[in-house]
Picture (tube, rainbow, N blue to C red):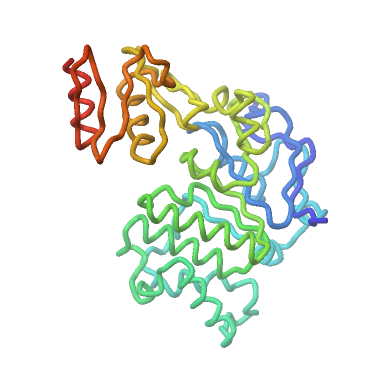
Length: 332
């Protein structure tokens, strides 16, 4: 049985205003993180994700209730002990941006180096490995303020890895990364959880990455209870749509993406028997067509000898590209 890493008991988070009642963001929270879990926190901007992270890591006091870290109230640990149990990557940056990258990452070793902060050979090895894991070893002599936003984010993750803690908390870790780097980071988090049994709690606005990566999702919205579950259950139950949709966006169960509702132009039949036709289906949905299965009555698109084909009023049309196909359909 996996051991319990973090647990909340009737935890209420929010803000205290002098002379006024406390402002709670959600109803009391009772959640648990286990060893090796990858849990993703999702919610709209301003929903309270960062406040929750800060409360779970004892950077902000709760309004009431408690956070237990390895079955002990987190507030009863010393700062040094907490730093050996969890590492944090928040949106804030180091105060001294003129530090070298090596020094930023090396600061992750402070729970282990003693009073004189003297690094041992094993510390250097861990720092080097942390830089390699994020692909930032080539930045080691650069100053932090000379880095791009994406490079800074990777360095801060390297620092968290250098702390070598059982729990890693990351607030929007992929916010400044390009898409390939987001996938790379996601694979790193999975590897840490699966191979090193790290417990990972992270937030992101990229629902596709959350749903593909996390063992569980925590959904938050102002004044609503935090809900926890696997992404498939939360999607089918309508909770993802209920908690995360905004304005004209809706969660499409078929594509597992948020979409802008379009007025349906007409029905087009397609049997996505190969990969190219699956991409045709995506393009048609994006353009506002309703894609259905062939029934002998609806305009049907097929793939023949490298061409996309359809017949309309006994006239046969062919297109080599999806763009050409869409133009033909729009103009008939």
